[in-house]
Image (cartoon, rainbow, N blue to C red; front, side, top):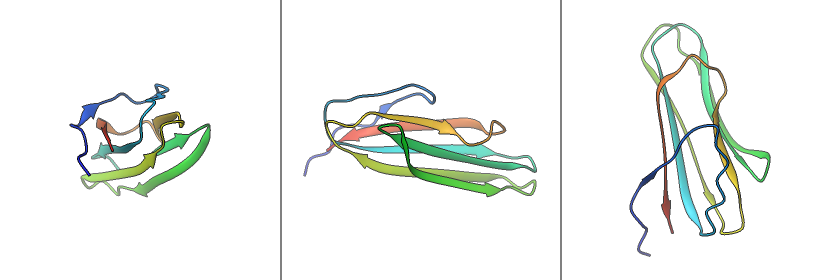
Length: 91
């Protein structure tokens, strides 16, 4: 397998890539609150990662593989995170 390069993508945007891909998303937080990230595929939650940060620096990440016919959206579960990162690599 020869995966493609990482391609940055945004949160809260619908993507239909037309190719199979590995999708990764990460949220960072440093306040006492719940935070998380989820990936919706074809309108349904495919994966979610959520935790209470308790005031410590924390990262939550989620990933999944989408097929060439899938559409997906990445979004935060809560809005307290900063420095959100998301990308995909074609497979």
